[in-house]
Length: 97
Image (tube, rainbow, N blue to C red):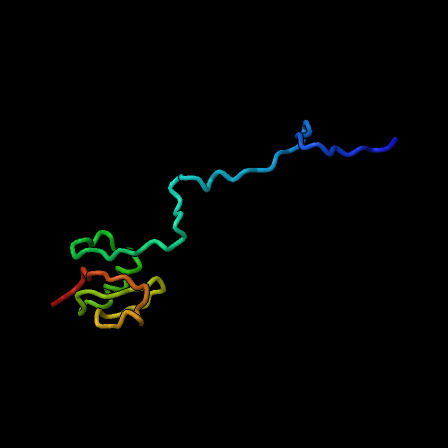
């Protein structure tokens, strides 16, 4: 016996349907495709300083505030923006005047 092919557009019973990705709907996903903008902490927000930044700030008590990037780079407030790029300005809770 010869096999026949189903050429109709109707689904074949028992055949698997293609998976549909519904996770890209409006479930709080970022649809702009851009990076989330980093906000600089306020002067009294010492609780918002991450642990890695706290350890760096503790080593530089002579500075009132410092820019720290995600790789641990440290920059003073006078450093040009082109050099410090994505660094975040943190107030130094260990500052000694």
